Length: 544
Image (cartoon, rainbow, N blue to C red; front, side, top):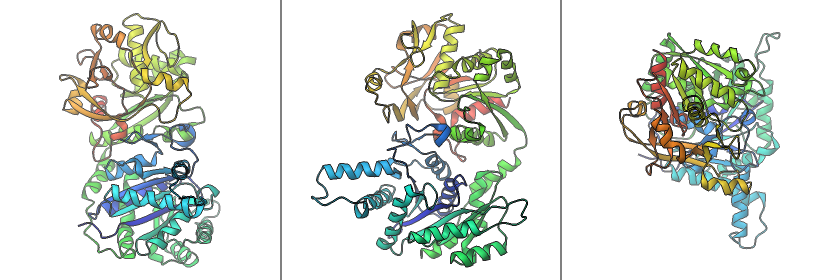
């Protein structure tokens, strides 16, 4: 039975960014969901960008694509993976998208000639979006992650909206502050002062946190809990310890060890239901017990600003590998390999022989492409299981055209405009958009159907002929070369329903243990309890 009124839980981040606010939000959502409530999650990004589509992955992290086609922050992927649900576009907003809506309303005279102001009109739009999301998702609980760090000028707008939400819904709003508690090795004790300052900064905006989640390298001891509680004006049991975990999927269980869902329900005066995290406990047990290793190399180009940003650039791919590995009772060892390395030192390509499987993920532009093509050639020639994602599929086709068909000039017009052999070409409806410099939200985006042929790797993976997967691209296999490629032995095992667009390509089973490329991004629909079928089949081949 649904709650009479939806409950809203705002999650703020204190002290510094990058401490796992998205995972904490996902974990809170998971433990509430485990008690039988319908839960949804919203991400607020304080950027002026209307969406995340034009942001650089090495600076902002992966662009996650929703089923609707909206390009969002990577945390939306975390929410979907933890909750194992599909989220609508309503659940993501930025400063830019909010202002865009307000300006559209003003132009349409919806404010009836009033002077349009930050308060109440912009903050009102934020609250309306959150309330609309609760209705669209039919949610009992909506968990709202406020991006940025407490005190940032650019997220003051959303902090104020959160304050007003409690005025509007006095019994249905809860504030959670995630704060970093440093443990300087030379000092020898955890320091709570930064958390105290973060709480006071939030107080200055009119918000008193109800719960503080203390992030640290080690569990927070009772003394530190008492100190945080005293100076931040909460009870000791409302300080939740969040130490570093071996796996992010252990965090909901860690929260429950401190009775977090029970505290949340009590504060919101919701009658508790029995919790059921059996499937989650089984997952973490399987993760801990997976001793045999499978070594996967991800060959990409997002390495220019240092390896510290790499995991965020490919976060969904990395998590999809983990999901499939755990399901195959394997511990994944993932190496990030810069494809430019094989261009500068061709002999180093032999290093790929040590991997059980190779992935070339999505990307854009010409940098590192020759290194990726050499990688694909090596995987094909040495029968190493290969999975190409989006650009990785297109380059797999180019490698085949160049080295098997002998079309040495085979190329993609993304790299070489006016190529004599444009095996990969821009989609016709995309040409005018590029000519008009229309880049934002103009690619083929979101979920599209695909029809799979039987007796193929793709059918063995999905075990059905009709699927839907998510896309993010402008270029496709040129129809003029499809017959030639198929006659030479390449199999297009997945196609659009009208058979015009090639969705999955593979080598025959007798020619290679697993050589598959998908034009879509299967990583976007993978979750720890339901790994994506293509990744499952890839890891199954790799572990052999």
